[in-house]
Length: 585
Image 1: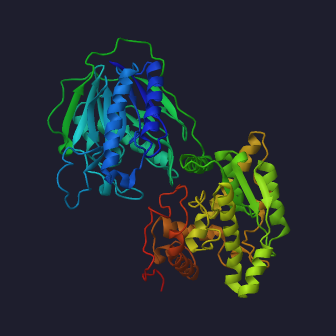
Image 2: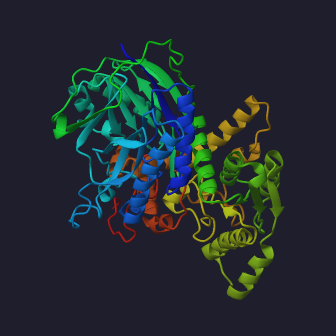
Image 3: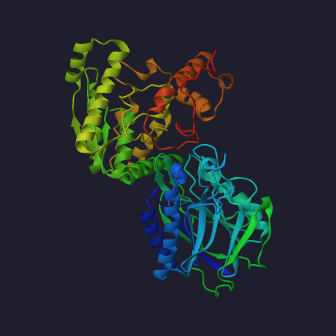
């Protein structure tokens, strides 16, 4: 059987950075070539970054992407890498893109595309066939679909090519690859991270390999882009679904594997499944001379659930800070669990030397809140200062005479104003510490604790916040390090400390119960009756759903934050602010 050394380059790209992304592709291609690869691949839209959103509708950006692709092909050849076929994702337009604009078709007919670069030329180009239009995806808005089955013959092996959703949907290029007699199905992807998605992804790739009847390689992106995190986890399985190789999570890597693949038959042509036209290009017809395999395949160790989520949160924050040109972050440290976890994530993401914390006590702040904040700073090594808000608070109260909720919220807004002032003065970006439970029920103050450029735990329910804090401390102990989060921040009852003796449970049910209700209502779109049927108190369900419904206007104004669930607040869950429909009586 012909042998093929495949190089899957699991890399991080930045949206719009055509020059930087091209440099990375050249660098990783050189590494692939030095390892003797016969075919190198890069993720979906690696040249432009993903997702490009409305940049796809800007003709100047499409033109720049196409020109960058041609320049990349020429540069690879000029640097002695032209003999190595390279599959790379980019932004293209349909050849019919110059037609007049039509209803139901994105302006300029952009394509989520990929190309095979060889000997200084674009040997083959194709577009994504299945376009996702759910969750965070709006690809019907941005792209026109491809209608071919691209196949390249490399050293006597026919390699069918696909892009991301082509594997996630039934039909299309997977059965077409079988019909065309492909020996390898290679899919390039920019599939965002979600909790437990790695298991779903593995099952999917196994299933598709069996349907395609050939070895299947799933190459994924890593890194972060705004609210999305890409976890890598590239996979190669044989035609029976047996795992041959698996890359690490949340890390760049060139995954190399030597494969024994079927000899290509007659050149396939015509139309196959779903009306796809076979587009076949022969790059090298003769099999590679037999060689001793050096890369039989590796299986990277998997992270456990809590380690995986924590790694995603660190990756998301690090990407947001670095890709937006910031160097340092600022956090209001209350001594509570949320700000403590955000601080730990920030220290791991950008280094404690780039993390600044401010304690802003008021007359209602407990002694342990102040000492817990200081202890967190001591354990982590972050920069720490204390700025009491008492004088500012007294000045406002003397002028306005506020009471009740207005008095409570004033404290939060003074802290928000103070953080933004320091941010402006010193150049740090402010991190908002709100969690998903609080955002769901509106238990946050607009222009107060919602102030910030990024919300690292925006998609983390409160119960998981506690779990992650315990996990991070345990991981530190296992490495012989000081646990970053004070034990008292984990064990004491949560409180906003905006009035004497205040506890979260004064306004909310226990978080374990609240989070279970929210999971059904927010994440699973279950209605009131279904949630009550699941065993929850009707009055509590009614009250909770009312809180969620009324807080939509607050969530719209909250900063972006790392998405770890299938239904994060934002693009995943889009509800009208002005909305009189209620699940409750």
